[in-house]
Image (cartoon, rainbow, N blue to C red; front, side):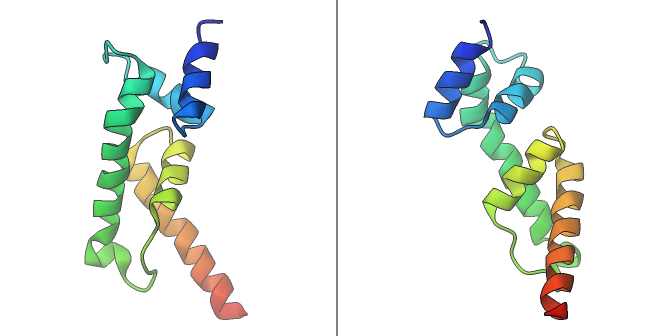
Length: 102
């Protein structure tokens, strides 16, 4: 029951249940709760991943990766920036290979 209210509020704010789970762990020190953490720190993590992906050695031949792709990778990687960067790169390389085969 304790977890239901944050999930309902998160959905109204445009966040997924998985993001609330991550916020509960990573934002455990945020006294205002997981929704506040999502509204502040989650976007910082997305930005950090996008900055890492914009480094020339990471972005060669794969194009620009969208914030939504980054968000999905962060969810899959439970908010770990370095793992999310690698996941985005792997996913995009797969898409490039598939596109080249068409």
